[in-house]
Amino acid sequence: MILLATDHYNSISQFITVLLLFVVVVAITYWTSRWIGGYQKMHMTSSDMEVLQTCKITNDKFLQIVKVANKLIVIAVCKDSVTYLTELDSDAIDPESGDVSRDSQMDFRKILDSFGKKNKE
Image: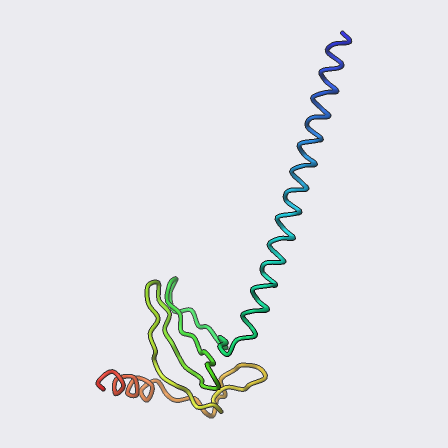
């Protein structure tokens, strides 16, 4: 009888020990992930490249407006490729909000024509 009670307490203490170790490992993993994310974000923002806007077209296709060395470039990002589409005027984007201003938007036909001309060159 005493032997059974000792085994019961021993298994409870083992369970609590394993549970505490699991919580410690999860906490270490969480804080390490946050630290690495902050470290990468700090290095990404200090570069001359910045993604201003992203528009999802399908599950694996996006249009992005990227600021590269004070130029605004529109690119298409697909699963296996990145394609340069066109360059925007620097006053087309509001620098504070990152939104495209309505009065400087080109209609779709002009964008398509400019893309077609650049591909022919």
